[in-house]
Length: 68
Image (cartoon, rainbow, N blue to C red; front, side, top):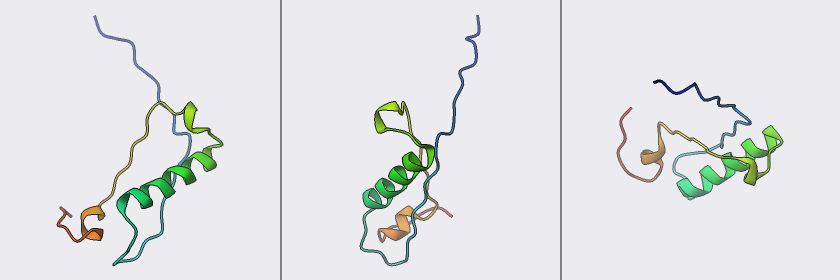
């Protein structure tokens, strides 16, 4: 028997401003985006059950290769 659908909500969205080359790590950039999303959504960190992020240029920012 199929499980009932689960619901998801977008509580906030964050984005970081970046330049290439950057001295900031991907962790620092990600942290900034997460804090921005929490503030934008009026959320406290403990109320979040999951978070997702993506980057098309992450590897390039750190001197690696990416698919693009």
